[in-house]
Image 1 (cartoon, each protein chain N blue to C red):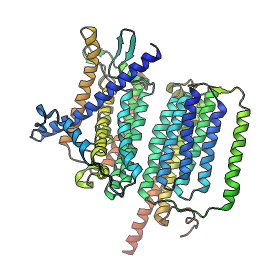
Image 2: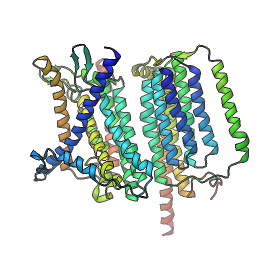
Image 3: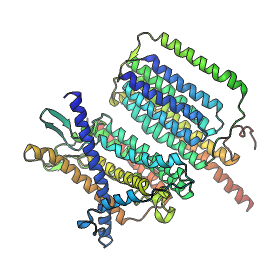
Image 4: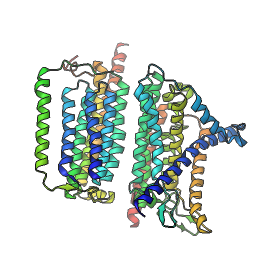
Length: 100
Length: 346
Length: 174
């Protein structure tokens, strides 16, 4: 028997690591991966609450979050490829002007 | 059956299945060399042992004693980890494959399967998806443009054909109503019209799905006609250019273990698993299902090797167009038609 | 038993997440993220959501992360450049976040009460999930399918755009 708060703390730690990665990392792809880490943390709390309330809708939400994450990853990586082609760099400090 | 006996029986099953799988991998290589040799009007291995049957042993000894060099310019951790990842995921999928019925040995009542999970099919799909990492990382870590290109092409090909593979299986799922492999086989018991067995490929009408599965499996395991990623004449050796001795042997093992897993899965899903004529005393009744299973997997392997000896290689853009523009719509059409027919029947 | 397994997989999750932050090359961060997703799939199994665990491995770890690894290998941008780093972040940020998270964990643990989760608590089989998905949640399901279609079109246009643009420029000049 594991208290629900343990799952929430784990989910919170994952989310916090995701936010930290988003703020301190300089590579565009690593920032994007931190977003995926945040989404995973949220998925864990969805499933934990679904287990506590014995409701299946939590799992359904997890599917929708995964589908949205997949769509976002596809489009985001396409944007990153397009940015790399024009700017020749993936460092966000150097991709800060609207025009080259 | 208490916990101790359960653990003992499981360990025995795991050791037995693992040993049989590794022997089967070695002798699939022998079978391929013999069959392709005979198709090309030559003998294949004949010198080592009768009919060349000890050739896999000789190859194993060769791989063990070859110099296992690590080039200086590779990314060390990933270079060593990539073949291990490939072979680990290839060998793990055998854990959920059922070989036969339940057996009763005195007090012990156990299925001829390492574990019967109620999402067995999804586990195999997941392990296939994770197997892509072994190839992608080997291409990357070799720090070599041929390997990188080969690795990228192989991973793109594998993830494209995974979709057609997964969709071709959904028709079977609709017919069986369960992800558990044992229940899928149990749904194919019996005969119709007297003697034709109720396999999914006949009675379930999944012959189109079977051919989609076949072609997607050829692409997933990087075999001819879809083996551009490891083509010798195009990319030196593709993603395993920089690998020698034991690590190369691990990639080799992973490829053949994937072939065997795919063959077992095709037998379970489309060809009725272990169902076949059963007769005789109890000991024969437990061995015969396993014999039919192995016979069907053998037929599937033979078709695999037969296609390898016959067809030329697809070009990469032809390969991707085939997967996305032909197999995927066909698989979706098969799914829609199967769902429609099942809904009309019930 | 449940607690031990939860702690093992939880430790692997946190180690993978922290490793993502500490690595310099994006490919190492991507692989740590795959490890996190695998450990999370094990956590879902502990909660009894086996279908979600399988889908997590197949979709998230086996497709989305392969896409990430693919793009990192394709672009081959190399190691991450060291940023200037701000002293404010080190003095206030990191200790602040540590204090904040310890505070929140303490509050959560104090007020957890008796809400416990048993191992394998979730009752649903994949059939039940499918039933819910196609009856109660049919509209979001169809909307997400359109979303995926838009994402596919967007990705094809965006990633293929630069090539056709350069070709158009070359045609004008030559």
